[in-house]
Length: 208
Image (cartoon, rainbow, N blue to C red; front, side, top):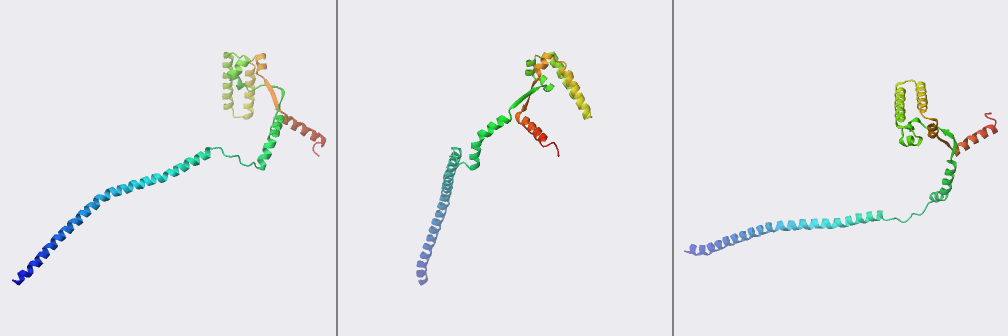
């Protein structure tokens, strides 16, 4: 009897504890499911926030690059001129004038240009060369080049070129040949050098 009396409160207590444990387990399970469900949007929000932060951080870099490019394109203030640049700027007009003087072409007679220029339409129109004669000249120039390429002897090649050129020029009339000539121009500095060399050679009695 006493055992039943003692067992009843303990049984009730154990039963209540089982219910409490079940309720606690259920609450824990619900909390775990809720945490798992909330972790997805939270992680997504954190990733979106990090991407937005990276984009925001990259915007100043892009702006800095654009500013640097704009600064590079904008005209820079003139740097102070160095001594060599100052000397070059002061003497450049004199140097240009002296270059124009010493390189002044001096006409010394006339010369016959290379016969290949007879193939140019502007030259043919200037000297009045008719198309059939121009075609014959082109054939002679081609034959000359073939003969030169087939000749191994260099001296013989020069003779072939000279003979063929004379044959080509013989096809021109006197008036056409005169129009075909052009002035022979020699720069003034070359004349000065030759005259100076001749003067000092004579003044010093040639080679001692």
